[in-house]
Length: 350
Image (cartoon, rainbow, N blue to C red; front, side):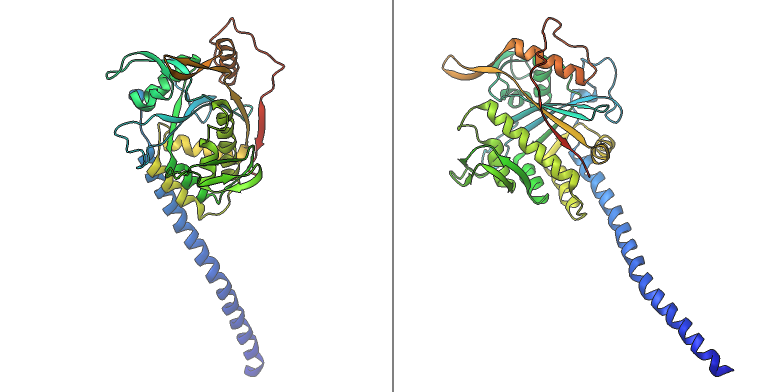
């Protein structure tokens, strides 16, 4: 009897050992992922806290009649790209190198990006340290940082800027490299300096390719091969490509590096809850990216080059953007040319 039971006990024991040997690594993986997720969340909170920088005394746009909730309402934002690298040796604020006004329509999932040429001739409001003057819009950031850039764009478009996001070239390079590069159909062959101002360091050929951080920055910066309008279009291409890659990135090792980049090199008045909600929105809903440019012409005033905006076209564009915000069109007399279609790209997390 005892001999007949022994094999059953041994078999049962072996089953327990096999089951334990399978479950142990699974439990270990779950434990590691749980600890990592907790670390990542904590690290993310710290980084977003570090990146947060309020303007306008924490109040919303004066053009709004009520506070906007980015998780529920259509919202606008201003992307400000600056070159404050050690090469420039700036004291205080640098000029903005890129300005993009964006709207997010949470109902239609449309993300509209309007490039504003850096040499646009606009009225920049006065500050404690500077007087009101007509000058290049790039100077607004140098005179009064993100707050004056926001105020200048609001005055120009007569539309609210609900939030701003400022990044420098270091963050740009890190984001693209940490994503493993971005895929872009480069529209033109060109040679450009790198982030250290080494002349002729970057040469890109026209066509579809994967760009690293330095190459993507060169594409976004180059402006002497044509004009600011085309430069703005290239910047839009780069931003679309970054969004496209970010929403499709599945490698968990990517996120800590991106989070560190946000904390070290970016400033925004979006709260961490707002950023988390917007990220979840993009990852689950996807976005349709539309791009716009501002029509205008080259001009010289007192020996200085400016880009003079076409007033009628500016008003039409502002009214179109107002619709994306459920905002009253600011220029009632302007007519919309419905025959002109926006460039659009659908970006999905799938």
